[in-house]
Length: 608
Image (cartoon, rainbow, N blue to C red):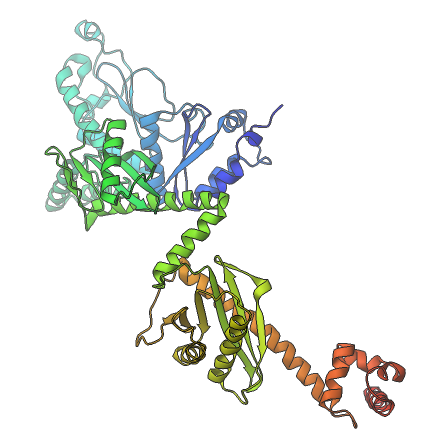
């Protein structure tokens, strides 16, 4: 039997899902939406379905076996995810949502399909023509709304078959609820069916989020109760007002005053563009999708967005008269108002759409570049060329760094990047020859001159970009050597200062700053860090070797040259200490060998 997990590459799909709140959608092999779910952490929740060690029920296993694609929409909060999930479920009614609900069932408010409909809450949905509203995330909030409805609109709670023949025949009598004022007695024709139906329509408006009028009336009731010194009633009404106001302001993805609008945003690349669409009805998002457009010519964002707007509105039969867009659209349609919001709820909607399209674009590009590494390299180099004001792609980059210890053991290191990646076989380091004392500028000048003097002599290919680890002083020293060699006009040279990651150009008074998240800056930082690592490693080896050589020079008859020969042959002082006189004579003369043996023999006796 074939494992469905082997058919669908769920690991690759999950890897591209972010750790953010949102809504996920499962699609089958026929591209049918089979399940919609919400999550506080999209990646963790979706990944849990494919955990083989998880003890899931049979229906969940059947669902997972049918998954062939996963899409998702990110939102700002978990509450927004919940509301968007329910909006999409009500819109699409996927097959598996009724059967599987995260191991729990949310409550709904039902308007029963019957004469003089009852209104109550339930956790079970029966397809009998009744109207279900919800589900509700907060049970207390749901009860507060029901309580408000019952106090505002006296409705029946009995289950009597209130048909017209039964009522006309006088089969029923009013109950205690009528005596208490909680029901107007439709069972004895004390309330007409039209009056009852009118109340039901108003209640539907409340349940659909149109509660502004109710809040206004409730506020007036609170004030009247307070004026009449009925503080207990005022307190009860205030609590209901707060719950209902909280429900209106926080329990909708969008403000309920936004009734019917379309929202579009776009993110472009050189060859592709991505457009996100949000459909908002009665204060909630009921549709969301992002599409990818491949550029055939050099189309601009306005042309691409206009095309996408037409496509989406036709696809979803949208008749919205207002469209929110990120910039002005030159589309002559007298029936449509284009809005570019700067503040408020509409701006939040545009930001949400932009967040989704940006993530979708990044995800698509990452997937494509994993399959085509050369595409990423070309894009990265093109971006670097633009950011660094170059006239050619920086395919070959070299970075210099100096190291010394209190002016001693100065070294210079060079690392090489080709096509944006380290080329370690081309790394080089230099023992400084012409500089004495701690002179970082002179050390940089010598290293750069020696590097490119040799490259020119050997006919090597010069780099397009040189990065100097340091500020204006080191940059000027490097430029001095390049001018001396006559190649300063052929290569772009920049310096990077560690403190604020400032980029310096020759002759520019002020530094340039790149976005901290830009790929160009990350490559330059990688170059700098790699040069520092490579240089400091070589510096430490040289310093350690110098320290050991100094210790050997304490032995009578052993000078600097002999000490270096011994270390080169034996590799360490430890091995020299353990060597016999005969073994030492392979490197030095007999007198020196005996002196070394005697020196370390005395050293051992002192330790004992």
